[in-house]
Length: 212
Image (cartoon, rainbow, N blue to C red):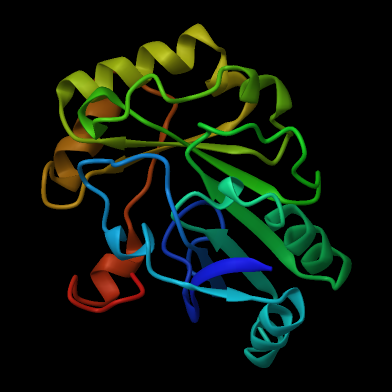
């Protein structure tokens, strides 16, 4: 059994899978409280569902991509069974996690998106450094940038751990806090190797639409 907040079909707004029709499986509960969190309703809301029921609903959308997100999915150990089963069934699976929990047991077929928390997130220093060693060639690192301090911190973190040389690194402007143009200019000015990422779903649907 897994406590699931929601399962929905939408356009993937982030990562290198951006733009793909995707089934999102959002788990309930999170161990962090980021200042910019746009899914606070997932902290507590949800219902226990069997693996069979989750798979049945995912199958109903007939989409090749499945994104397991939260909350923090890795708070529930049964999520590993779900992801492995989805991979076995031929789905392309991604996992969105803060990196505050170990990704060691994640099926290697799953694309791991590690959302490293910056100082302005309110959850700095929550990242488990061992997760860098557990990353695979397909792993992507995401940094939500809220300020110039966040930008500089992210650059230092990436360079210190050679992330630019090994992985796709995504910088995303915190929606409503810094502009897309400002972040684009910073990336160019600092000759960063990061890839600018806009949260596409927030431009397609309004902030009031649940499921973004």
